[in-house]
Image (cartoon, rainbow, N blue to C red):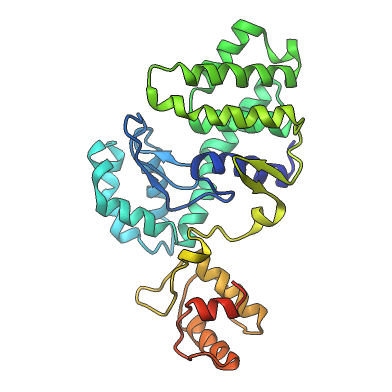
Length: 307
């Protein structure tokens, strides 16, 4: 059984494949020409065509405290019917991106992707005789990306089963077979995704079966600090200016500010919602630091908070 750290590392590898970030990008909306999945969304990029995007947004709309539930609810019928006209609906896309800053959406996605993909992958791995962290990650990636069963059968037909070859040898052959399957697939959009198997090949060559940290995947470092850091959707140079608004601003960046304020001695609730309590704490901090007291977390206040 994988440790919690191994589970988070495995998920981080696939997050990097999908969004380029260790913690994923909860608000990322993607539409790749020719992609049969059509509109894709979230930390691990669930798709309109699979019907899973509808299930995720339905979960979110039914969760207490979801900031954008009332505005997203009207899209549920079209999502349920997998209406591809939604691919170009900029209102929906904007709402999905905005929802990615809502801690409720982040929690919904974490639970959703565990239930729909991770737990399924763990069971598939166990059924195949795969026990290592890296082997389970390969299965998880194929569960997210699709066609696990197709390539599993192809590998078995050409090389034998996992019990015959041993797990490490079988996974290595599966990765090679999947790379060839992706590279030669009739749908050209899949050809560019061979990088996923190339990354796994490098981890196999390095003997990283237990996923020891730190790991370097596609130029991104996975370490314990990266795994526990807030999943900010923006870089430091692009950080949002935070302030008291109606409806209140929400997101991991708000939570990071709140955590910094608590570390500076302010007793406030850390909930990712920029409410009156956070506004008061920001003003008190600004006054103590000799900054302009306006309740606005811009570059100067952010720097003083150590963010």
